[in-house]
Length: 253
Image 1 (cartoon, rainbow, N blue to C red):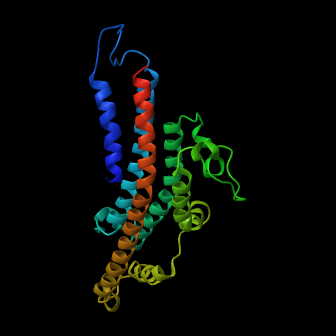
Image 2: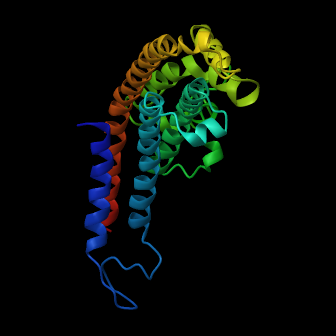
Image 3: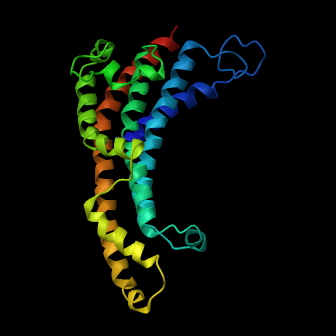
């Protein structure tokens, strides 16, 4: 099962629940949009929306890689003096900024499935997994109740942490500055200067070098995204099984 199939599973549960509709004003049974949701209905909705936030973010990570490689020079970009290098950096930085959000949204999903009752602010690594001193977080005990969940979450955290420093740099101080992109930056700065026939003839060479570098980054980003999905898989499997059990128990009340 792919990770998006787990989301589809939750959507199917919600669909089955909602199709049993009773539209009378004061229904005795069945789903009705005019009344306050029952506990199990709210549970399904909360879990579905929380998981969709994660999968939406994963799609955005893939979009960053794909769109970066699909640059098209346009009149509007020229007017705004947005070079291809600017375009590349925009998508790389967008990818980095989103990467660390995967854990935050995943912990919100954990909170919803386990009904821990935490605010979104508390759905952080330091509270639910471990703090900066590598000590168990205040709510780690709840996470550890599901066999394998804590360890799988920590595996994902450690993988994403590789890029946390880069993410913090662009979020708080300056543009990302990977050394292998510096020549590309230089080429495009030169081309933005006064038109010169001696420089123009190099445009084809610069495009070729840029295309090669973009392809490399695209493949690396997509490979990174695939690894994230692979690490999400066992976490989704554990949480979906717990969701199914709780939903079944609630719906029989």
